[in-house]
Each structure stands twice: as structure tokens, then as C-alpha cells.
Image 1 (cartoon, rainbow, N blue to C red):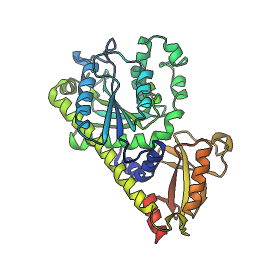
Image 2: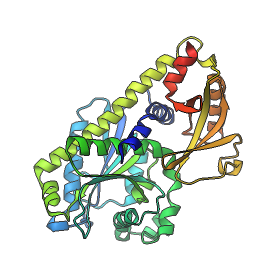
Image 3: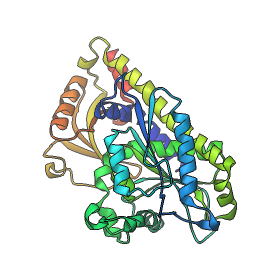
Image 4: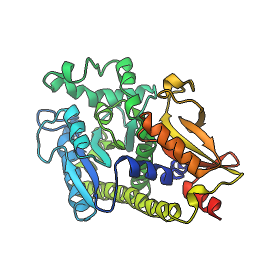
Length: 365
């Protein structure tokens, strides 16, 4: 992803943090749960470009990432598989959801009939890009190896763009967080390892659709590109890739930890919740989607006073508007009571979005 896109999403860290904080009930006693998913396994070898096995490389990288993360007392690591076994895609999502994970990270290796090479990280999305669809189709086709796949996926067809489009909206409430994490991962690959950056992309991966937390699917490189395939299959390459992923996850977590602390300090300051400012406006973000929806109550659980903005490739939808933070909190409670469990307050100054912590500091002075 281009640098300006990364910066755009970095500016949302504080807001996104507070959303994750409230949704998952994070407190001082709860560990940060990371689910690591090694793609393929068992009877599903994944792609076999240049004779290498995707399932083996993905597993080695995931185990290396997990081993290092487990050294952090604040992190709990959950694996969808630790051995060479076949795991249904819907089961991988269930494992993450049962663990109430804060992150879901799936690791894969790419393949193509050309000289394509480099890294790319996917989030769930509705982009009608043919190349992205083909990547998703290859990864999704594993469902045909599963027993009762028609029942488990309710008629989903990996070969149908319409089927892919139909699964996407349920995970889009986590899209901001997922893109932020994916951007940090790609930044690690590009700046630290000097790998070719193919960007952060959106596609309809079933394994991402099954999860209810920020989720990414990393294509760590192309086995079909001779030089890159050899690198991915080497111990040196796997160590470097795992360290980059570890660094990205820790950077993401550390930014959340810092911003939660900042929010608590500001929110507990005397009178902070009752302050107002003529040039600062608070709204409640209730959704983020790559689809443009009418701001009608039937699209937003019966809520009125809906506004919409477009930022990058996403449409953001907001409920309510007030110069009073305490009134904005009331809007937030109303939205949650209507079923918008992952909504959060955002701030604007003279029409431009600013960090919530900065808005609260300004209104408190």
C-alpha cells in the first residue's frame, strides 16, 4: 500500500484502539490474544511451485512467530494447527472466535504463472479486482476437500464472484483495524527486509470472513518465482519473515497499549466528559464499508441522524453529532443498545478528523 494510505490509517489508531478496548473487554488482567493460522496442511499441500510445499513453509513461519510471541507475558498465542494436519476453514475461524482473539493472522505462500514476486497482505473486502479474486479463489478452493462443505458454507461457491461478494459485509466493522495491521506488516517487509511491496489488498477469503476480530492473510512471497521460492524455503528466509511478522504484531499491540493509557488519563481528568468546544464536533462511527449505502434507518439498525464520508477506498458512517463529549457518549450508548457493538466516538475540528485524545485535551483546557 502506498505511504499516504498507511498514514491515513495510522491516524485512526487511537479511535480504533478504543473500539477494540470496549468490544473485547480488555483490562489489565486480560492477555492480548493472537491466533496464528498456518495455511493448508495435511492432505492440502497448498501450492507446490518449484517443488516447494506451501503447507510446510507456512507452518514453519507460524511456529517461529508463535515461539517468540509466547515469550511476552502479556500475549497469549493460539494456533489453528501446530502439525501437518488438515483443518477446515470454518474451524479455523471458530478457534479464533472461541479464544476471543484480538488478532487473527493467516500465513500463506503465493503462486502465479508469470515472474510475479513480492509480498502482499490481504484483508476482507469487496474490491472487484480480477487478480485479487483469483488469489482468493485459489485459497478458498480448499473447501472442496472438506466434508459437508455445502452445509458448512451454505452453498458458497469459490468460483463465483457473486458468492465472494455475498460474504463480505459481516467483517467490515473490523476493516480499519485489519488494514492498519496489514499496513504495518507490509511496512516491515518492505523497509526491514527490502522485499518487493505488492501492497495491502482486499479480497473475499473465507477464512477471514469466519472471524470476528481484526484479521489479515499474508502472502509471504511466490514459490513459483525461483529465487523467491528458494528464499522462502530456506531457514534464513523463514527466520527473517517470522521476525518481520513478530515486529509488526508487537508494533500494533504497543500502539494500542500506549493509546489506551492516553485515553484513560484524559477521560479521567476533572470535567473532561462535560466539556464542549465550538470548533470540535464529536460523532459516533458505527460502520466502515467499501460499499456506499443510503443513510436511511433501515441500513443502520433503525438509527437516524446518519452522516457519511469517504476516506480512501472506504465509506465511514456516523451517528449523531455534538460539540459535547458527554452527549456523544449518550449517542454511543444508544448505538450500542441498537446492536452496533463495535461503534466508537470520533472527533472533528473545523470539519477535519483529529485524534480523539487531542480533542479531549483541547476541550479540557
